[in-house]
Image: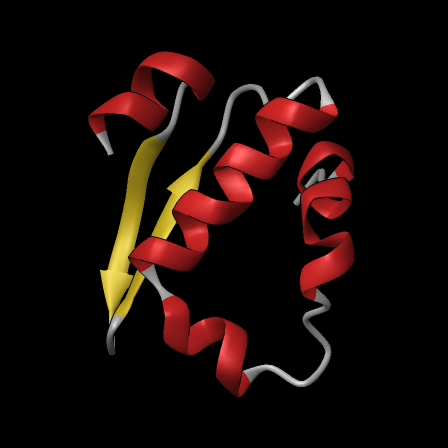
Length: 69
């Protein structure tokens, strides 16, 4: 989390029921950086990738670069 805070301005905004909600000030700006973050997401929460049928690992890094949620 500390690394994400420094790199992307991440702040914890909530938690509950096995979830952690984050606010991200700046998403990854290049493909290499986005792939690293995607791998970090997988290492931190692998169950999300296995439980969500709509989550496509091959394009997840691209979604990280475009998300505005």
